[in-house]
Image 1 (cartoon, rainbow, N blue to C red):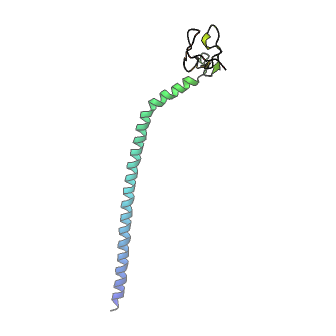
Image 2: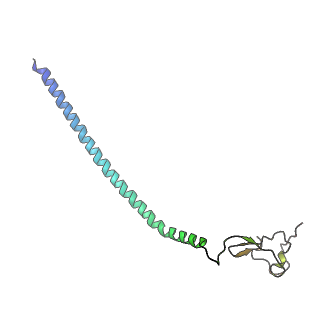
Length: 131
């Protein structure tokens, strides 16, 4: 009769050891699965980023080449705006017209919204004098 408490203690110790081993095995399996998933996801994300980069690289090269060309310092290119007044020789129908805009943008004269390149004769059908 004295041995049954020892047997219970031994059984409890062996159960405790088995539970520890079980949870250690589960932990190892979860870590392995988590590492596999992480590696798979990382590879997929890396491939996705590489494909996106490969797809947008030609577009970005064109875009940045255009920007570089637009902002490069050359004597022929002026990208600022400046006013031009109408004269009897150039745009005579616009002298004194309310609609005249007369700004040069990127080397192109913008005369007015109705006739961006101006009117050829002295009698513009849309002319309105300042009042």
